[in-house]
Length: 100
Ligand SMILES: C[S@@+](CC[C@H](N)C(=O)[O-])C[C@H]1O[C@@H](n2cnc3c(N)ncnc32)[C@H](O)[C@@H]1O
Image 1: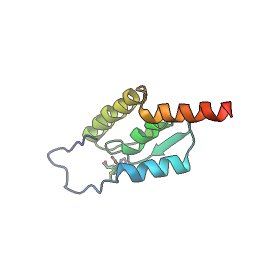
Image 2: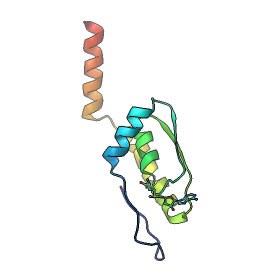
Image 3: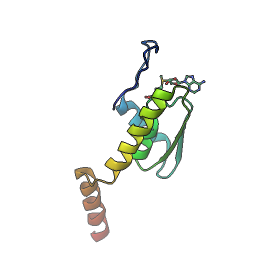
Image 4: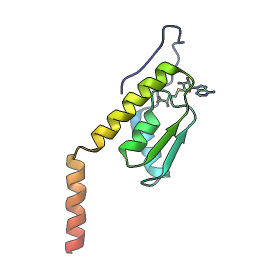
């Protein structure tokens, strides 16, 4: 995930790890649900929501972070359209379940 920081930004940011965000999004939302974050930052929560078939809305104070979030979320949309080995494994499992 790319980051964005303006010259005058303080050096804080306590980045949540994507793995933690993924667990929360998958645990507390279903596909097509809308995930809201009032502190968008560079978009990790919305990126993850889109990645896992949810939709997302975020609010961000800083322009640079907002623009980076848009880039990151667009990347999630692009990546989502790529079939991964996990998708194939899930499809295979679903097909097996239907055939049993
Ligand atoms: C800890 S960061 C969030 C990081 C985010 N979880 C991510 O992974 O990118 C908190 C964000 O909230 C933004 N923020 C703080 N106060 C805000 C406010 N009142 N309205 C909108 N955004 C705000 C900050 O600019 C900062 O980008």
